[in-house]
Length: 459
Image (cartoon, rainbow, N blue to C red; front, side):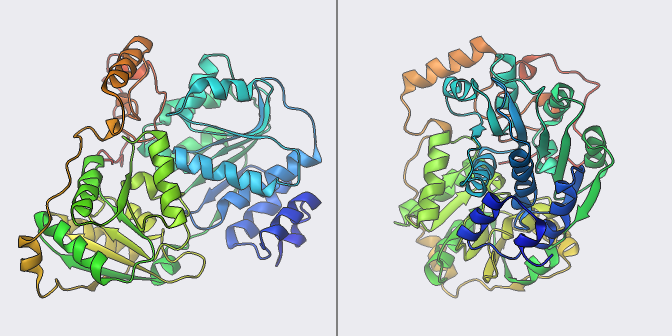
C-alpha cells in the first residue's frame, strides 16, 4: 500500500483525503486500515502524532457508508471514547473532515458545557459519537443515550484513561455495549493493567505497533539547564527573550503552577495563557484557539495538553517542571517537530528533579545537551518583575461569585463533582474525569486501591 487509493476506501472518503492533500498513509495507517476494513478487532500501540486517528476513522467511516442505515433515536452507530475534552473535540473534527462529502452526522459530548443541548443533539440519533467517559455515563443515566446499537467501538489513549481514574467507567461502558461489534483499542504503552483491560473489550484482535519515539526524539534538539526551583521564572523570561520562538508549549506539573507562570509572564509584559483542568471549557477552547491562530505564542499547560493536541508550528517545548513519568516527557516534547519540522525541547531541572531526568534519559536512550545559565542570570533573578495579581482559585476567573456559589450548591445537591476531578476510589484526581457523579461521595472501599503505576500527581 503506497497511497490511500490502494485501500479501496469509499469514493467520498478518497475525495475528502484529496481535498486535504493526503496521499501517502503513515505506518500505522498502512497496518491498521486493511484488517479494520475486513471487520477485525484491533489493538494498536501507538503514540499521538502517528496518524492513528485517521487509521481508525477512515475504515470506520467506510463501514458506515458501505452499510448505510439511519441511527436509532438516542443511539449511535460508532462510539469513540477519549480521555480529555480537547482530544474528543479534535477526533470529532477529523471525522467531520473525512466525512465532509457524506451525510454522516458527528456529535461530541463532554463535561464543562450544558448537558441539555447535548441531549437535544442526540435525540434523533447520530452516526458517530465522540465522548469523554463521565459525560457519556451522565447521558446514559438520564436516558438520553443508549449504546445497544453501537457497531464500532473505539477506545483511544487507554493508558491515559487509567491514569486519570476512568477504569470503573470503562468497565461499566463495556457492559452496556452490544456483544456483536467491532472493537478498536489504542494505547501509547501496554503494561499489564492495560493488557488486562484490552482483554475485556477485544475479540481475537490484530495487534499493530508503531514506535516512533526514537525517531521523534531524534528530530528534536533537547537541552537541559540545572537551576533552583525559585529561579526558574527568571530563566523562562530569558529563554523567551533570546530564543526565536514561533509557538511554545510550557509545561508545569500543577494547575496552580501553570497560573503562576502566566501571571509572572504578564508582569513582564509577555502575553501567555494557561490551559488545565480548573479552567472552564470556554476558557480552554479560547486559549487553544488563540494559540492556534497565533494571537499568543506561549501556552502554559499541565499534562492535559501533552496528548492528542495537534497544534502546528510549535517550535519549542519548555519543561518548566520535569514530569515524574518518563513516557510523559516523550508525549510533551512530541508536540514539536511534527510533520517533518524541526523542534527544540528545553528542560529546567531543579535539584530534586535530577532523578526524574535520569529516568527520562534511560527510557529515551538520549541525553540532553547542557544549556548554561545566562551570564547575567543573577541580575535577572534580582530584577524579576512582580507577577500580576490573580485569583487563587483559577477555576473562578471571570465568573460571578454568586454564580460560583450556585454552581457549588447545584453540585452538592445533584451529587456531581466540581471541576474535573476523577473518582477518588481510583486513587487519582484526574483531569477530564467529568461527570463521575455519585462515586466520588460514596464511602471509600478500602479493598480498591490505585492501580500500580498510577500518576498520583497530575496537573
